[in-house]
Length: 325
Image (cartoon, rainbow, N blue to C red; front, side, top):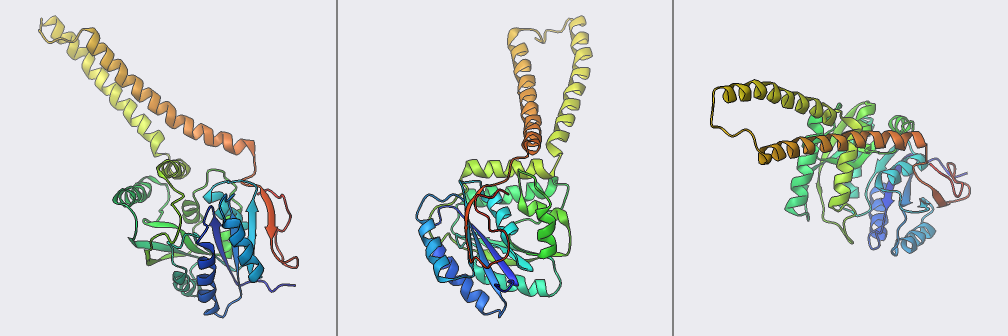
């Protein structure tokens, strides 16, 4: 029987050819210095490049590596979720495979965990190798979600974090589909703290979060942890109603007084109708997003499908092929 690992490192992978070998080497160097038993759970989120060959090579050389292969690409947040469900350690560390999050920071996280903290999140003090647009939109997003969310989500933090087993079990009990892990981690509570680090340039490959995915991710975060968009609809409706209440007697008075101001005409009518229609369509879109998330939940589809798991047959944990999560 394989010894239960003290620490689990979870790394989602999607088309990360050129990064996996280096990631494994650096994690080994860091974890060997701790003297603790550990495992590396890599979730292959339907990679279509040479990542599978690199994963197989790493797995064959190191029995501490477990590879969970998805049947197709199910998305980063679902891959992280699967990694947590397969992880067996008392502490679980989430890290991306692109090496922008340095594995060496895990030592600081482990120190904080030993001090009694249940969640240790990494705060990005500096972001290297990213465009001004990426930095600006990321900064804007983190501060927006901090302002409007019903919970306090630390700014400038990603999924790079350590979680105690208690926190992991709490997250495993939350099967929602449109997932925002950093928000869910804040929602469960427990003792939390942060450590600062410098986010590095991507080691190899291209970003897996283009603008389209960033917008979708932001939408999931906002609708998952805030009712602010629905509240805006109410405020906007009240403002429009107030304008109408003021405008009706004003226009009537000016017409009775024989004013030459032109309130009639097709142009004015069309502008008002277009303005009101744009508000209505925007509000319907916001409502539709919340309804779509309800629909996702009531279908009860699994978050992901596992095609196969590469691990020692003596390992404990989830090992069934073609399993769903």
